[in-house]
Image (cartoon, rainbow, N blue to C red; front, side, top):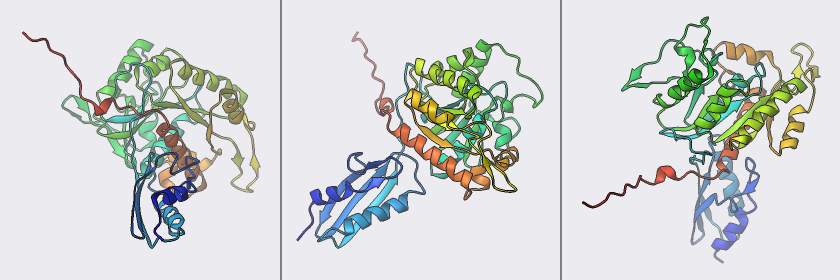
Length: 362
């Protein structure tokens, strides 16, 4: 008895992607299903960077289909393809950049920049092409976090971003002295940042991570409106005083129509390096309560860990310095979940169509 395509699809409905929580048929991930004799071949397309997930998924598909009566062999190819997704409003797209993710916080000191750099590194580790725009103009920290210094090259009037650990970076920090404060009013600052965004030769990027300035003032609002942001991640601590400002940051993005991908709760717990005692020194459950109030998702909870600070200060953030560690795994899980949320957004097909120019006959 030869297996049918319908039987194959029924079996694939039982294979649920742990990262999306959905089966391979309802998400249309299983494609080009063919049955020839007892051989079943198909392609499984994942819409998020999934280098570490490809082989486990292939094995699960093969196991599910090999159990069907009449199947002698399964040829499953699992691939990851990142599509551009719609940015709200009329902000001009950035050539070559598929998706822009803003990492923001209502206030400073909650670990926003550390989260941004580890998120970028985690996405790159899963096979994505990733860049970082350090938009924290008054306190740029990404060059130090990635161990980069010196002015970037300029080719054809475009800044060539510096790169390390597989991530490209441009920052105001490359153009000013480390101890020289930036004393600019908001219109000048936002104009410079937009120039930094659009006059950088990013190349082809699946994701551009924007490390936003803390707060919800004119600079942040203008950036949210002028940059074609695909989605935003809000970083907070469980502390009530941090949550007050984080809520303002979330509402700012909502007002300009930017989807909230989720909340990252940083410094959720502290684990003593001597005795292992775990303590919620900044409170507990604050991020979860905020997520429930606004109907968004908690992407992950990160501990307060001295090694994260040491690794980031050294220019080798956690995801690259301790890739097998517990904290690095949390960062990778946050990155995968954020990428899945982006993949769930409406695709932006504008790059697929040429510009049409109508000319009058003379």
